[in-house]
Length: 295
Image 1 (cartoon, rainbow, N blue to C red):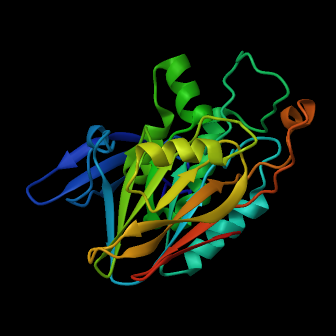
Image 2: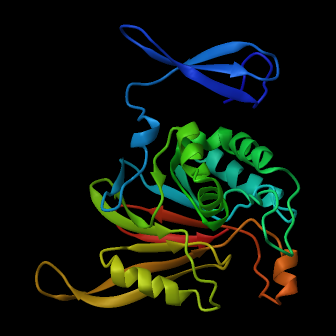
């Protein structure tokens, strides 16, 4: 939260102040020492209720088409973080009234002190990365659907500190949190589409292999979205199915690897990994169809 007195990001929650009609979150600023409070809308969920538990389906409804941007593997704080490309994504989302987005893990680089890892580098501390990410996405925070953890942010913070930094990030932004893969129902003018998303785990060259596994588990998906391996592509997969009238019809689903905002890093050069350009995928949901493209 930004201090209204000095514009510092170094603020701290100081509990809630309640009266008969309102609840306000109080903050103190480490930079100027002043306190301030922000009203909490009645529909904002508490921290321990933000997580979308396995089996639950996140849902969003719209009377107009929605363009959903999957921002995955951002790696804020890495030496090779592509700030210009990430700012391009923020600008596009900010200027489009029909745009929404979700964070799909590895939002920050997060190399803890004395962490046993080679061929990597970061330009700021994990705390600075966390604050920098919040500041970068502040203009589009109100358009965020949910946040998910990845191997850099969620797994490292949880395995080392027993603390989920991604859940805290989602709480700070006031949005739902996905710890695991799952469905999201996107309803446009009464038409329900199902997006299945997860951070991903496999580094295999063939990104479809992991998407095939996901599609076999979440069989009702229309879009299957994974990050992690930094591959950037989207492609339609067509199959034949039976419609409500018992006739054969064409069904289209989409396979997506969401790319990253990390330029060709030292660890990739060291291991001769394939070069992946930075970027992200946009998914457009209308009443009649889904369309996807690379940015």
